[in-house]
Amino acid sequence: MKESELSTEPIGQNLIKLISNLCFSVFVFSVLIFTVIAITYQPPDPWLESAPALTKLFTQTENATFKNDDSILKTGEDVVLVAAPEVPPALAINPITETVIEKSEEKILNLNLKSDCEDLKFVNCSDPRVLVTVERFNLKTFKFIVFLEYQTPVSGSKLDECDVAWRFRNKKEKSWRKYRDFRRFKFGIGENCTYNVVHAGGWHSGINARRPRNRPNTTSSSGNLRLAPPVGDEEINDTIPTLGSEMNFRKGKYLYYARGGDYCKGMNHYLWSFLCGLGEAMYLNRTFVMDLSVCLSATYNPSNRDEEGKDFRFYFDFEHLKEVASVVEESEFLRGWKKWNRGRKRKVPVKKVTTYKVTPMQLKKDKSTIIWRQFDAPEPENYSYRVCEGQAAKYIQRPWHALWKSKRLMNIVTEISGQMDWDFDAVHVVRGEKAQNIELWPHLDADTSPDALLTKLKVLIQPWRNLYIATNEPFYNYFDKLRSQYKVRLLDDYKELWSNKSEWYNETTLLNDGKPVEFDGYMRVAVDTEVLYRAKTRVETFYNLTKDCKDGINTC
Ligand SMILES: *[C@@H]1O[C@H](CO)[C@@H](O)[C@H](O)[C@H]1NC(C)=O
Ligand SMILES: *[C@@H]1O[C@H](CO)[C@@H](O)[C@H](O)[C@H]1NC(C)=O
Ligand SMILES: *[C@@H]1O[C@H](CO)[C@@H](O)[C@H](O)[C@H]1NC(C)=O
Ligand SMILES: *[C@@H]1O[C@H](CO)[C@@H](O)[C@H](O)[C@H]1NC(C)=O
Ligand SMILES: *[C@@H]1O[C@H](CO)[C@@H](O)[C@H](O)[C@H]1NC(C)=O
Ligand SMILES: *[C@@H]1O[C@H](CO)[C@@H](O)[C@H](O)[C@H]1NC(C)=O
Ligand SMILES: *[C@@H]1O[C@H](CO)[C@@H](O)[C@H](O)[C@H]1NC(C)=O
Ligand SMILES: *[C@@H]1O[C@H](CO)[C@@H](O)[C@H](O)[C@H]1NC(C)=O
Ligand SMILES: *[C@@H]1O[C@H](CO)[C@@H](O)[C@H](O)[C@H]1NC(C)=O
Ligand SMILES: *[C@@H]1O[C@H](CO)[C@@H](O)[C@H](O)[C@H]1NC(C)=O
Image (cartoon, rainbow, N blue to C red):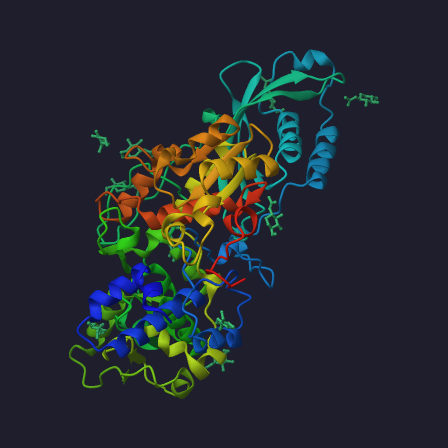
């Protein structure tokens, strides 16, 4: 392995700084470990990456040419599920299909509504025939959408208009989360005295049907009861569960990972370690003690510095995590532990494990209430993901399905796709450091130049389509050339969705004890990824735009 190959890697540079005092062999070893994380954590499809394959990657360290594509972030909802997802009973709503619509029509016929055209001189929005007309129209117009439930339409701004609200799911999303839309429809009278849709308004145009928001008072993360302003998506409930009584605490069994050397490393590293811990807890049938405070590494921060104190819930769906895994928030756990121990002779039984070399299998029989893993050795011995290496990899499966993106970010994704009526194509343009690394990606820079892009895309995408560009190219005007052919959309065109007037801003501020939250690089990647996945035609950098390999020269 050549040193020059490594020094272009930012992670490598960080490491150099970190351990420059140590001898070179330690350095090489660390870099290898890191590179291997970069490979393994980013499998094209984490579900299909079997344990033996991961182990293989860990042992094949001689070619350290893999580079991490941090312009994409795949999580559980993007992945084709091996088994059908388990739908929480509360969310199991039957979609509105053609059959359902026909049934409602039958019911309407039985009502014996007069159907001479006299009746229909003006549009009565609560007439069930209006709703059926809209349902049918939507089903025909939005093929990617599963319509779940409608509210009774209400009047729009004119006599022949109604505003209709509904909940839906995108077929391209594998999660069961529901989103809301409300649109304004203009009706005419068809030849058989039936309603028909003359015009349908765009995304969120039916403002009269927007539900008044009455949200119950919620408890903030600091535990203070606050007067809840009418903010945001009232379906999100990612409050931190309390343990309740001391007895409840004592009944549980916990797996507690102390903060390891992973802290403030890349987000890939973070996820790889977090899912290892959660996987071990699942394997041991224990509740995982979770540190919701995340350190976001410098690469994703506009400030270009590591930033501590980011809330896990800014990025990921804690509500879903609570549903599918047994977790307890760290400070809640520590409070319970302390309370129990105070003034009691019999302390809570704790098993301290000070090295990752003690395997999950060895801990299986342990009856202690708390298994406390500590990671005190020097790097890279103090990375918590190492628990899942070697033999353990055969037993522990990282629960990728437990990790979904934050619904608050997904609402932004839905808004962007909705504003384009889900009728858009997308291109993923990977540039950044890879484009600068001529050695490993000799053609990437040229193949993603504005002229080359235009030439390639002309063949793949019809002119004047909406074209969403998911990219890590920071220069906004870089893609201007494509505007002569396409309606180009970039994430920054939707800035108002996270501005201080946005729902997202209100919601995250509330989550952050009233302090505004910055829309950081990791959030950008999450949103970019999901919009990309909703496109009708998707053009990828590797395979479609360039012959260079995703992971560097000679890797494909
Ligand atoms: C490393 O690279 C060499 C030559 O490019 C190749 O023969 C070998 O299979 C590669 N090893 C791995 C693990 O990819
Ligand atoms: C509109 O239709 C609903 C349901 O059919 C009916 O109850 C209501 O009286 C109608 N309103 C008007 C003004 O006709
Ligand atoms: C109107 O009714 C006639 C007879 O029932 C039918 O043949 C025709 O298809 C209907 N037209 C529409 C637009 O539904
Ligand atoms: C919310 O809290 C405020 C004051 O804390 C109280 O006046 C109000 O009645 C509460 N609303 C509900 C719906 O509980
Ligand atoms: C939120 O979820 C918790 C369980 O995690 C539940 O106890 C609480 O009642 C829920 N709150 C609301 C407002 O639905
Ligand atoms: C965890 O629970 C399942 C079912 O309750 C049981 O089959 C399994 O053996 C348990 N594992 C451990 C480590 O206790
Ligand atoms: C991990 O190791 C590094 C280097 O040896 C050290 O600086 C760091 O403090 C360690 N982290 C923890 C949590 O022990
Ligand atoms: C929102 O941001 C703008 C400019 O960034 C600023 O002028 C304005 O005062 C901010 N409003 C609030 C309510 O923070
Ligand atoms: C955000 O909160 C402010 C103050 O609570 C409110 O005036 C504003 O309408 C909210 N904005 C959105 C988009 O919900
Ligand atoms: C991009 O390449 C992949 C793999 O060769 C191919 O399946 C896909 O159809 C291509 N996309 C377009 C838009 O041509």
